[in-house]
Length: 196
Image (cartoon, rainbow, N blue to C red; front, top):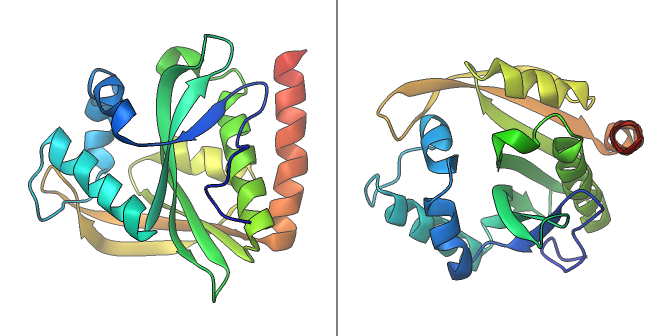
């Protein structure tokens, strides 16, 4: 299955390919301010449009599959972004990342729904390994990913320079195929509790 095939949706959230139509919605959201501290530096500058163009170029080459998050309970309103990154078909691995959701929608099972869709798609694609790279100070995200069943593998010291110029350590977390299947079961329970 193609990682970007249609059908990435559930009762909580809908994922649509991030393209030009979402540029202004993302620009006017709080995502840019929030994500600025976790975006790697790029060669073409540090402005919003430089980053958006960079993401679209990576999508065109298959290095990244970015998605807009749409709220099915609010006429598919734009509410965030997420991505599948660095897919490697030969080694059957893919990374999940760049997830940002409007703050008022957090804690309602939507993050679990997003991760569930991405993990299920990765498994359908044939992934043997699913991974997350998270900047070390983002302990909230690290705890959330560990709660899915991901294992922390270590820290890549001064791994990359971020947009704000700071060099950061990156925590590597992963789950292998059987762990991912268990994560889907756990995520299903979380979503069921959120709907109750």
